[in-house]
Amino acid sequence: MAEKGILIIISGFSGAGKGTLVKELLKTYDNYALSVSMTTRLPREGERHGIEYFFTDKAGFEEQIAADGMIEYAQYCGNYYGTPKAYVEEQLAAGKDVILEIEIQGALQVKEKFPESLLLFVTPPSAAELERRLVGRGTESAEVVAQRLSRASEESEGIEAYDYIVVNDILEDCVKEVHSIVDAARKSPVRRKAFIKEIRAELKEFSKGAK
Ligand code: 5GP
View (cartoon, rainbow, N blue to C red):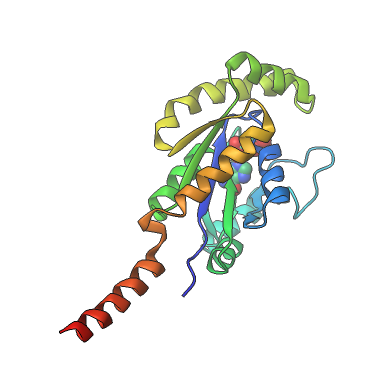
């Protein structure tokens, strides 16, 4: 029996570079699958339905919640964001390591439901660098930048719930670091259940023979 994939949560302040990090992981290695979230926020320029997000309205989102179609969901800066269940379950069963790029309230819900998930928190080297990146992105108004920085300050209170902090300074290094953390996590007994079961059964057979 093959092992299931690892459910990987990647959180971090808005502007920490999570999106780019995830894109590079998917491009560089073939063990990952990315869950596409559903949101009620409006698409940014260039964002496509079904690629960056499934865009919907409040009623559509609430319908999904009612149908038990979400692994988790949360409100962030006035909009709903959530992870549709079906794709994640299929990919994990197929042995893929599934990445959820979600904020902290959702991360905590997933940790509660799936204690063997791996929680990574991505941060820039400093708050000044975070502000520089948010302003430099040019996709958000000054008001939204301020809102996201204040949200980052709140989110920093929850970092201890995560398994690892990853500092995203040089992207290429950060990608390798995340991949090596995932590889190490794969060796933890909580994620080697199929292997443990198999070797135990085999050992039992051998010990029978030895009697
Ligand atoms: P953005 O509007 O910048 O795309 O995303 C805002 C925040 O929502 C980010 O911190 C992002 O990680 C988070 N987010 C995106 N998708 C989900 C989701 O499905 N669930 C939760 N809980 N957060 C999400």
